Image (cartoon, rainbow, N blue to C red):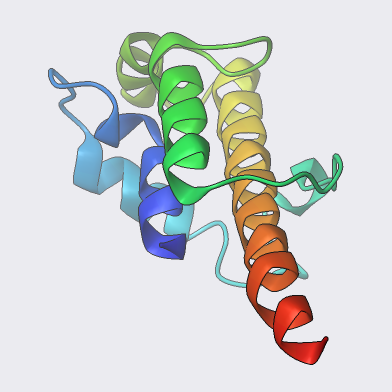
Length: 123
């Protein structure tokens, strides 16, 4: 489940005409190998914990990753921006915001699991 939510939070899984899927994943992976000295840590911020099912989380993050939202660029734009070096700031910001969105969606799903399964078992 965590892997699937992570996958749909990156544009290559939301854009059928993408050309840089594997290259993009490798590029981001090389910049997120350590939580202490990576590029994207500053983007990760807890928004709130709400009840969410995995299906709902995947649907929401897929829609945003594909169509864009605020600082998250559309999948088509992201694929086009991948080609340039150095990468533009809006490209970096979009990755960070997508990662943040995915992390928060996963946190909501895990929180819901805890409330529904673990807390109920303790009562």
